[in-house]
Image (cartoon, rainbow, N blue to C red; front, side, top):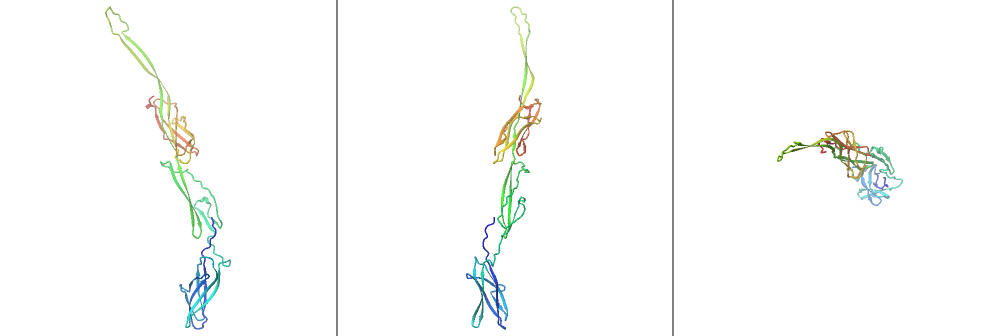
Length: 325
């Protein structure tokens, strides 16, 4: 923003000419200069001296300068004083001085160059009026190295510079936080077994022929035979945990898929949104086809966000050979 101009750096400067009309004798003069308001000017007659010797019939010059603190107007009086046998003699010269249209000011920083470290600014701009420009920069989290972290912080520093007598600048920062969702899961298997039982009972001996007063022991034998008829109803189930590390925004999902390495997917009850800074716990499970009691399957949960990013859990194994039916 261009602020109203401020009057400053007032200065007055000029030349004092002293002529010695004597045809044969030089003369030495002490020189002083006084501006309106009794402001003493600085006189320099050479090497900072305030006196000058003027040769016979010659003219010498001294310069003077002053820095008033405000506008002045009036008469500027220069005085040259020489010592004579009769005492000091002073001679004066006058000139009008004022800050007006006939003495236009030197304008400082009326026009400046503006540049910005963002290329989207569009290059340097030169202006003599108040300047305003809006531009946009797209900051994203597309190519971020998260390593083992779920949060990465980046500070984007932007500086605008005004090219003037004393360069000025200002900065604006954007704090960019990138968050990576995570998915974890559990998995367990189950199945059922059906058995058939056969019962056989026998007696030995099966016939007794005894006389009166006799007895004989009979041994009975019972055989119960267990036969595996079938193994069926294989099931894989477990929990899915979806973590949203973003403390400010909910995580919107387009899908949550739980899939076996056989290609079969299992239904789940996961919601389509995870609140900011929270973990969504849900479950999945269903019947599994194409397996038996010796099979080992792996199971992975994958989420897809509205930004099109997919995140998968670590695979979980189910060994039906280790499952108690």
